[in-house]
Image (cartoon, rainbow over all chains, first blue to last red; front, top):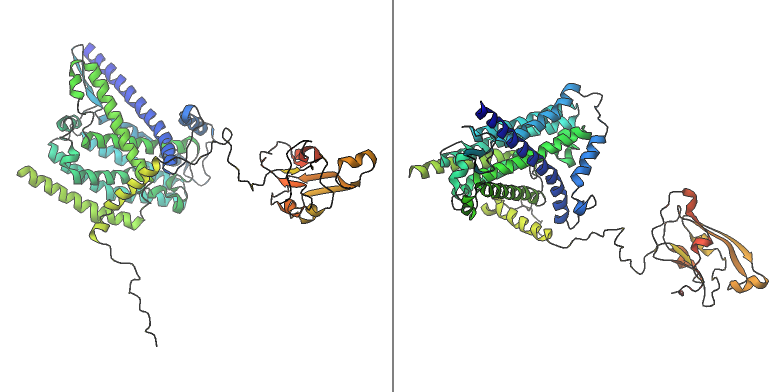
Length: 342
Length: 170
């Protein structure tokens, strides 16, 4: 019985830590986005709230909280209220399968630094990530606004065309790893030379591009193309409901970055880190730090690309998805299969 | 007869080569450019703490000038009020006599000289029109206020205190 209690206690602590980290990362991703955007444009960005503007996310949060909670008259009230929740919740449970540090061996216990390690880890991530689009579609529909509907429809069709490429790219990786379990995939990669980005460069590229589409980031941010669709699917939203959409988007970005790190960039592993094996606590902490740094590097890549490439036109996006990414991903699968056979 | 110019059927757009159609090389070049900008110095002036460098020809708040003897240069000729496109200047002229005469360059002077800062568009025409070099638009620009009544600037606000640096007509 005490074993069960210990498990529950440890798992709750892990959930709390991961969620706290995720929300912090989301808050500071919004700050980073604005700050880096400013740097790319020769500006300073938000630098007033607190030292270097570091309290800006707090100020934004307070502002969102105190704004009027408004429902347009012609909106479908229930769905309108439901949509932000449906968009935000999946992004929170995404991180559950991501191994974020080496196992902690303490007091005779082996604590895996991962909330859950199911046999279908990667598939779980894709399945839950696809749920996020429901919130977007529901929001577009419930707002009863043509721009919102168009944003929602774009999100849906993008989802269909990019999930295929994403999944197929991951198939190549899963074949190379021989497992769908996240912890196995991460531990297989080793300190540096074994990272799957070296073994699956094409797959990594496809996965990365598809992830940009999956998280609705520029150049594939068509569901919220401001210049064409006002605000896209969240045109009619305000106050904390809009905040939930945006937090969901950033949480999705952080989670997807963590996934990329776990799948292709060696997870928490880094050269020289193995030397810390003697003290497990230090090893785990260092691993978690490496994971965080890598994740933020990928998040920074997302922001960097945002200020480099203009948005794709809708038909270009579809062409890229179906005519380039899917065949290339298939080719990658076949290539991987042939290489494994040899 | 000159040959009629012929245009390619699809305009001048040429087919992209395979390398260009890959997009990725161009994207990497773009990423390099934006990264260069990332480390460039920024142009932001942190305004209330840092003040902008004003150009010598900057047109800020008006100053009514004095001559080398500390006398008011304005002779109430009304040229500034006449040229003002926003009708912002209101002048009432008066004749100086006796002791008063020493404070003004001419006999005629502006007893009331008001500029409505809500109307003024800071075009500087008054400065150009002034034959006496009595009005200049200088560098003060922080004239915001909470009360509309405070925007009609009279001589108390506009006139240079005695002993201020001289400025002469161009």
